[in-house]
Image (cartoon, rainbow, N blue to C red):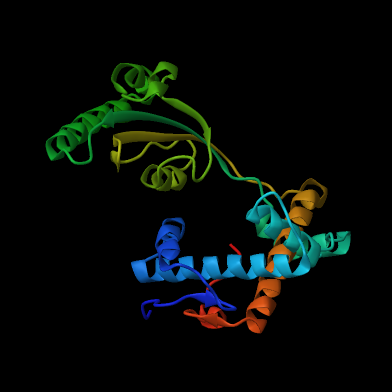
Amino acid sequence: MTAIETLTVNGVAIPLAAVEAEVQYHPANSLDEARRLAAEALVVRELLLQEASRRGVTGDSPEDAVAALIESAVQTPEADDAACRRYYDNNRKRFRSPDLYEAQHILIAADPDDAEAREAALRKAEVLLADIAREPQRFEALAREHSDCPSKDSGGHLGQVTRGSTVPEFETYLCSLDEGETCAAPVPSRYGMHIVRLLRREPGRDLDYPMVRETIAAYLHDHAWRMGVRQYIQVLAGAARIEGIDIAAAGSPLVQ
């Protein structure tokens, strides 16, 4: 991106210092990209403030005036039952309860940056795993004696977990086990070495339409509102004189 030298909206200048201050709110892959996003956001804000002033829309703060302007200018109808049902039928995979995994583990803690500690944890976990292979019923006793996880007090039981509720490296191995199966080798994670056993797997189930109807309606309303605001801003931008950035060619959403 070419460095921004001036930034004006209908002749009103936006200080470049304001762009630099705004950058922190727009994480991006590069500083140039963050600056572009910041400049775009400030241009959009100025467009809306100018339009609010033109239409006599006021508020206790500039942000309140912008909110009042958008509320009056963007009308979003509520999603009817037919639209909600259609979305449900076309996106059935989204409407399932998560799979549940009842798990048990023993953690031998080791700092990921301490190679010696990791090696010692691996060796200890291998010994414990061999003990469990010989006497599977000792899992709980060994967890109470050796685990560095608070779950040791319940014999290593983690209760029911879902995908995303544990660290990925642990979850990947857990979800690959059969019911009643213990891992064949210690499972490394950022916390140390785990001995993992899957006790029970409860597959998720489809959620009936009445259970998710209100959620779908809220999603569709929010999506329509965002599209309406984006289109409204594009109309304002198309009628404005903007120097320093081409909003139409920016390529990023104007409404997050």
